[in-house]
Image (cartoon, rainbow, N blue to C red; front, side, top):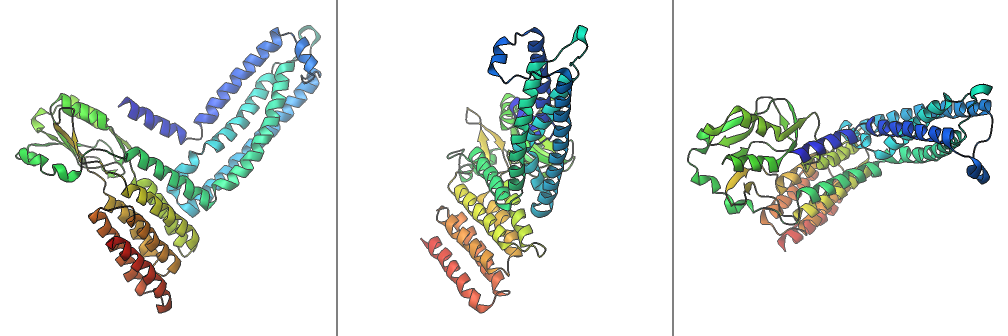
Length: 439
């Protein structure tokens, strides 16, 4: 459970715009203290020989640091404004759910942190400069470091201009979402995992009146189920000799008071056990990809749907999304999906999960795009090509049948909206699908 909470905390901090800049601002305070300590106690003879240390008077040091501080805070304000504009463009073009991807962009956070850190450093050094003869103090090393930070900030500004113009491009947004999908596939669907669900379909048959003798554990608040701590649930079930049947899965919206799981036998329930089980479910305001493979798929679908809308009408962006969806689903077709039945080390049934299915993921990826692209020949052809490619990666009869059904739906929906000449190209791609599925 500790790892799950740490993961949730890190995801929350990584998605914020305050954590990294605040951390860097604290480091700038430490840097100012260290540099001022060197100035008060150090010997400049060796450093002065290098010829790079600041050697001006107190008035020049004040003017220099004041200029750096005022210009940097102006640049930081401009950079923040550009970031807000980028977020607005992302929200309108790609959907508000993708704002989280932009908020997690480490580059923007570091740029903002460097500008703020340079500003704070200059202020802290500026307050220590004294021009009176009896307590004259010119922090030469500290001022020199301030100049270096200003030069570095200029380089960061150049990077930021390039970065800000890159992250709002459709290709970058699609590629970053696709990277999240691939990461989720590798994390949630290793090469070999669990048993096939069919091997243990009758596992509950030995428990008479399972539904009647079970006790429901309900949700304590509304929100999206983000994470289920499987290890904690397995530990609880093993220690108390229980069977836990999950009634939901990550990514689903949970209504307060709805069932999270059924506990068998229900007679062993108590308040402490209920609290421990509830603690294994992390419910938040938004969906995350940590245990929800559908989330990045639906993000790609949303980009494609917005691209196909009459207001934008950009089929090329939709085609890019279909290409990434086809690639991700083809990788999933080669993976073993985890069994719904989870056993402890003594081979006792402990958890029955609500598993995601490959057929369900195909539906999530293709249904809405098919419904929105009935008149677009290029998008329809690319859908059929994606299905053909996925079909080459699976020998599972149920998966191949689901792919065939989707291909048939695509062809049927196109017949009513596309002229006969274009139908020939669609039929060629459809025949290619059927040829692969027959092999």
